[in-house]
Image (cartoon, rainbow, N blue to C red; front, side, top):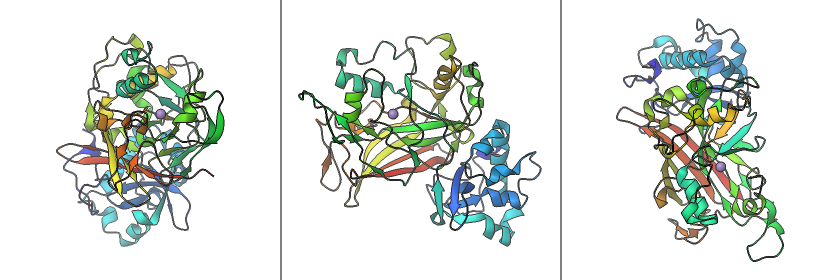
Length: 424
Ligand code: MN
């Protein structure tokens, strides 16, 4: 067992009941304390741990770290460059330091005051400098729903879908951290019965419930990452809201795929939950039939049991959970996505981000987008304040949450929040 995952561990930090951040989580992020520069941080309960000051006080000594500069960087890319064995060592060391029995920091009042913050006193930033961003389309329920709506319910999946983890290259410049609001985009749309397109604000604003994984190791151009080796490259996961303007998307997507309907803003949760923290929640994914090609075949469990939900908070301040889904429904797993992504020799970099694709489940209350929940606008979704939605309205706030839970503990991602502001 990974030392930091031991269910018996308790911390000397108070952890609120049902916190996403017990001592067994130890996520990584970038936080900006007031009046200070952004720096790498971790979190236990509602306490943020300043890793640059933890390094200053010598608590990371003797781990074999050659460059302590990684703990003073405004992004986690440098830390990830230390490599997978060191990700693990640092996480285990943080776990040790906050163990109830460890007095090193617990009984050092001065160091404690310097290294720890309340979550409310920290501004969370984008955790990595994102090089490239890829979005997949790996939920069979989502792909089937969309295919049924727009093409043919009898042949909802295109012929390639069960053979290839379908994806496209997106844009990283407009990926923002939770708490950043996004204006409704302008664009070109064409109604089915119109003879020509018009220009104006999108009328069909949507979210896509996704997670994303981040690579913390790079590969060389011309080299494929075999599926057995993919775990060495994946650092961790975040929640990902792939905002989508359905009317813009529908008119533009032929033949090269999504473009301006997608790249006006995507929102990520600030805490990267490591693959090590998620390990106890490994589970089997759906059976893949027909069998996949050999380079996509895998052994063991590669799915993760992550409960996911989406809530809409209307301008009245009332929140309604409109979707409850789970990452375990994904037909294609992250290892297959990464093996496929590099099978042609495409190189990947530290800090690259890979969206899962909309994570829909089998039941109508588990669909991961308004497009599916309202079935293309034909079934309005009722909200707790008495209003209804077919798509997102101005000043609605979309809140995504995700957590794993077993009989021992709960490991979560926190929230991924954005408000859709009126078109500029
Ligand atoms: Mn997407």
